[in-house]
Image (cartoon, rainbow, N blue to C red; front, side):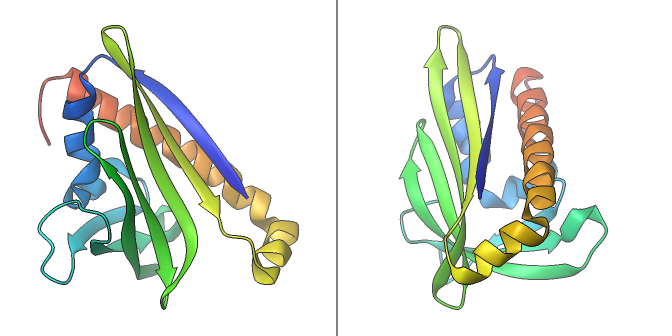
Length: 154
């Protein structure tokens, strides 16, 4: 299962990337993940850096922590991370920033890793989750756009 949403923002890619790649900002933008913190002494985005996010599923619960690892980290271009179950990646989130004249097209995407369990999940309601993810990615990107276009840094 996967999906993506793109929103054009009247801001430089570097300005947008700075907000996205500092995971401590996630609670200002995401409908479900309301806080995050770097782990293992990391102080910012870098390949392999780990962080944990505090999630309120569907904005109502359950509430839980996820551990994540940065897998793409190109300032002004892309930021991505995998959600871990133990040491195994189960979900991947990615932001791609593409200059488009005076604006930047920002694409947020997710991809669940294939496994027998995910195949069953996909058949038993995974499409509801996909729709929720698409809606929430749109909300996240619109909130980021409001922050960068309003000139106020969260």
